[in-house]
Length: 389
Image 1 (cartoon, helix red, strand yellow):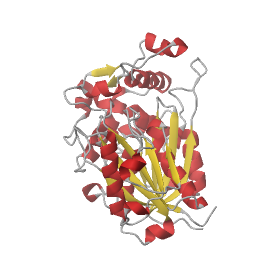
Image 2 (cartoon, helix red, strand yellow):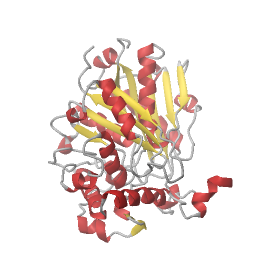
Image 3 (cartoon, helix red, strand yellow):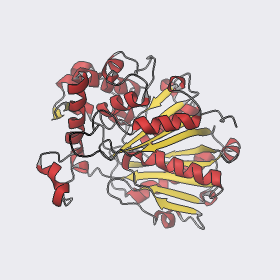
């Protein structure tokens, strides 16, 4: 591997949540500008741009013109849905290490929330044409992401005895972390009883099993570790990465709901980093639903397969627990910026800038991305320390 190891040097975040009247491109402009300023760089220093367009594919290569960037050496969109943030950092790191670019901005921006419309409408799929065999799941009633994730959760429950109360423990832990995060959208404490009394969205998933929907943008700046060391913020070093895309067959033999691509992507990332799962201090897990957290923790090896429910119910994930997880409140309670939610919190924790929620031991942080319905996976291993050569 090249001596030009990569590090995250800048983080830029817009106002997140119910923020109306702005386009994704406008959000992206602000986030990239803030990320560059955070690193102590000028926008003109950027020679690579990776764009994750969001659910509406509203931002694309034309963002270069919006940002007034000239002579880019790397420019592309990355659409792995929730796995995109991890994929972008991986691509940026490879470009840095190969000498293809020196300063790469990675940005996600979206504005699915519309004033006067419920958040469920943003991801309802209404108006999207479905034809042929691809329309069969919808014809069977699997028309929304909650319905499809509910099917996965139900299979796990039937196989391993996982319970709704155990999923509720994940939601409660996320809210406990969010209460410590001034950026979080939902900071009011919740109890397991609150979870159990929240309305059903798609059995067995309840309202408090489901993530938020947010407008806004987040960007990171990736550069060489040597350059990052001389910039304005503490560098966050990229130690390892992996991807996995299972391509579940839609028939009886599928592992859907039992094993995800996190198993392969996590193992690859740990191998590249040269560390074991027991050495990870903080977990930033993509949590579009409580079940996603549970199965990802299992697949990463933090507990045995089928024991994720007991692991969550033990309090291990919550503040003061043995395995601090989603320390900003995650997508369940903080903000929903696809894979940039876990990535941004990982950067904050690695820098030691988490304030009341800062975890004391932060040598190694594992970050997951999940896209589609458990279809696309990315993993990063990050650290405030340079990786030994």
